[in-house]
Image (cartoon, rainbow over all chains, first blue to last red):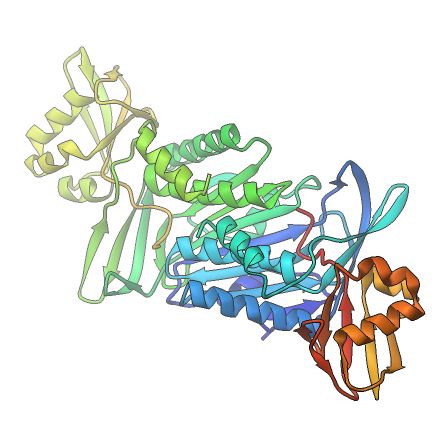
Length: 157
Length: 157
Length: 84
Length: 84
């Protein structure tokens, strides 16, 4: 049985991740899969190299689940992130949230991907036609109430 | 290659449905799966019998896709609904929406399930411990602007 | 003229038929077909305010015209899409 | 005392090292370790305002104390979670 929160070099299997959260009490499973897109900011992407501080990343995923459980009790969540070399179309992240009701499943799934992008210690180096660049987003600060607020708003909460 | 909009007696395969919408231009795929829950309104569910007016249901799914495309251009959508006898844990509906950006994928996926529940000519008869009952929700009216408004609001649009 | 009537879910249970062939006098609209049906199956009466109609597998208003050979469907309030 | 320093992504590229063992004078906090590192690798300087710190694989403020044997990690702004 795979773990609900994982960083892995293996290809992600969204169905297997959804199966980790679904149970007879849930009537709704919302899933999000982020994939490598061919174009990024006008650049033609060849591949992405994902790197993670894996033990902290897994703890961050657990933290995101705890934050979700506080806001949406009873929703179960799984987050898997892939690292290593990914090509166009490969899934980099797969998230599943299961709940008795669809509103909560959608909200937790969306909240989780927002928080992953904000605070998971994971980086991607984009290899595009003509060069390569580390992508740097936001400074990760799990205690920042502003970031959490943004994630809640995007989750339509 | 299965169709993007379908009513089927076969078990639903959410991964196959997600594969119908993902392409190299999409970076985000949001999926929703509705499953048969063990408890409903305090009743212990034994099985559900789903019935559809299939040709109209498929047209309604296409209509939902057209409504989505108007509001969120460039998002691709697939909707499969199962009919026949389903037991607890079985998926009754699977919806996938793919987009360059996650906000649109989530919005279309949510909008689609709301519209399916409002206007798809599909019914379920619940067999529970001690009896059975046809579940009747809302009168289906695809032109009702109020219902559309509710769906848009739930999609956080 | 003759139409094919399709009935679903509880409407089917109440009439004991999922499909009926019925004569209606022209000109007719969806409402005409429904009224004839309620006369035949009074148990349908309570659904008059909550059904939707369809002609040839497209949603249609109750005042939409019906022609010979049409398939006219009556749909009780819907409940697809999952439990939750 | 001695700490293990972990560097990721561009910080790793700039220093050429993903892991370093370094002596720091006690008492030290995360900031002390970073300042020593910037002295050794001036190219890291621009990251002073944007890095996050972690001690033993838990996020830590820059003023969190560091003990002998700790693993101190420095994280540039993150970019996980997919393209979109």
